[in-house]
Length: 79
Image (cartoon, rainbow, N blue to C red; front, side, top):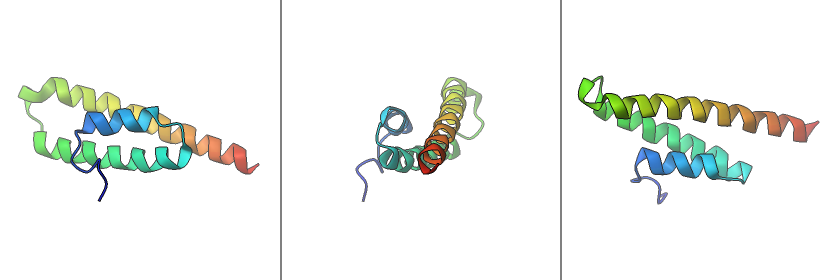
């Protein structure tokens, strides 16, 4: 079992964004997606957690951009 399984979504997110190895980054991006999804499910749409939900929205966009960059690097390396 991954040691990131019980880490907070923020920890997994930071590890994914900072990872330089493309294979590890792809795995961490997936783990960050899962951790964020689980946390969103826990929070629901509560106005009490508006600040964290806003941070999650920013993190989701950053993961999308990172995933896109990884795909571009993979495409360029295959050319």
